[in-house]
Length: 519
Image 1 (cartoon, rainbow, N blue to C red):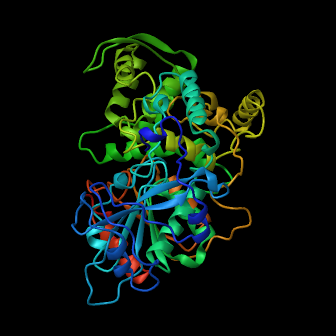
Image 2 (cartoon, rainbow, N blue to C red):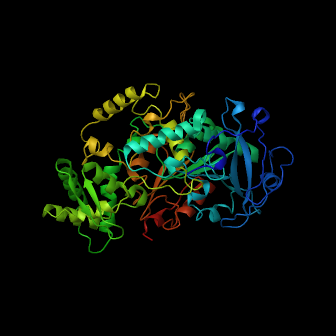
Image 3 (cartoon, helix red, strand yellow):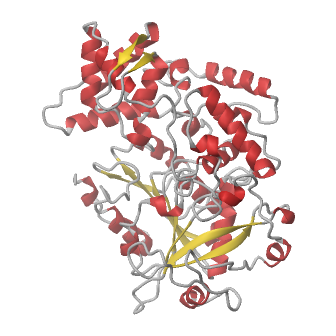
């Protein structure tokens, strides 16, 4: 997810934004790595191909297919404070290749995370298909990739306990200072529109992946006249009265469904996932297990497995792949016989907390925290309250959930696990100017919408994707058999890119039977 040496101590840049903010034309600062040319003329209003050629040189870095152009477009860091400087957005454009017919609307690919760079989108299987009739555009959102990626080192290195997590979040907010609330989806949506205007596009298609769905909805709410169609790749509502994404309410049932589905698709697998997980949750809630775990690779270590630790073990699969059904069955069978070792060995395979995020230019934990804590400010507590008041409100919010909300897990077992970042934003500063993803009073445009989801996706499962039907009731859901997260990942994309192309071309997904065939 995030940034570089120059913002390690201070994210603000020294470039004044008065002229840029006043003209809104946006200046092209430089080419992508490898050098480039200065912009010539004013933003195009008709021939986008000419605008791209004039302003964006060929990229030295060339993801497939060839022909990408790239440049940096300056946008205000804080649109209410010109003195705060600018952020250079890394913008990449693949002009359409078929010039024999009029081009369709350009497709803006929106990465997820939050905190992922645009290149980590993982949809290079779709770009070669779409760019025949559509310009394809991707950018590194502010604070990620080559758009001044944020490097909050304590967060980036991961943490080993909830206390260390809170300390890392606090340190990151302090590092960002007054800009800690300027990396939310609202600001990213405004950036997208400035890039759209700079390139001369009137209407655009949106292809958001995962958390990019929040940005896409923020954009559509602010600029409905500029949206032609949306294809959500594993999306969810940005404005959900139940805050289901924040609290992960859909995950327990989704995990059981996905793991049972994986078992049913494997010859010889005979595990009753729901019964085994319910047994393990109930048993470990009453009697935690402690002892020496011996992972297959790595050194033995002492672990304590209570209900919350089991949730962490199980739900590590949200990002790393779910704990497969066979180990769940083996762990449950052994525990019923009084043998703790399989459980201890499995628990010892997990790092004792959140592992390092690696290169912040690929995935920035700081940008993730800044977006997360801005977009969901006030979810579970009043962000304007003191830390003590926030903690009290957080505890009351958790206690108010019906006992079956996270079944078969208890409320404390679920929320007490480390995988979900629950309460991570308690110490994040209250936004100076709250700019939620969906502004108050906004009306979501009912543009043609397609929802893609993998039936083995545990990160944004079907149960969560279906909630988007409350936002886009006319949308069509296409479930891709055997696909994980995101659907467009080349490992299992299958026919999803062709369905996406057809939808953007005709506003009709057409025959989607190919999505039901396992790859």
